[in-house]
Image 1 (cartoon, rainbow, N blue to C red):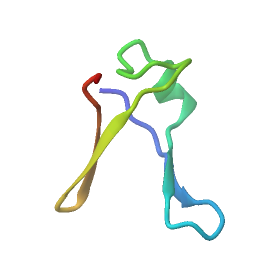
Image 2: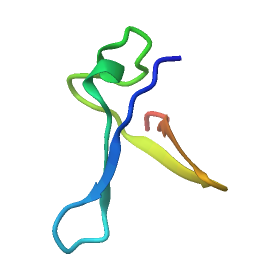
Image 3: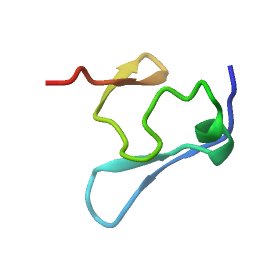
Length: 58
């Protein structure tokens, strides 16, 4: 499994936060998300972990 150091940050005064994923991770052939269009995702908190998975298409 490839890994890299990313960052979670907030933009402006909104409580919405963004996850920055390092380019080396995104460029890896096993990266599970669409690099061009992006994907809808489900974000879960599980104790001390944040899990991000693709949402099922509607």
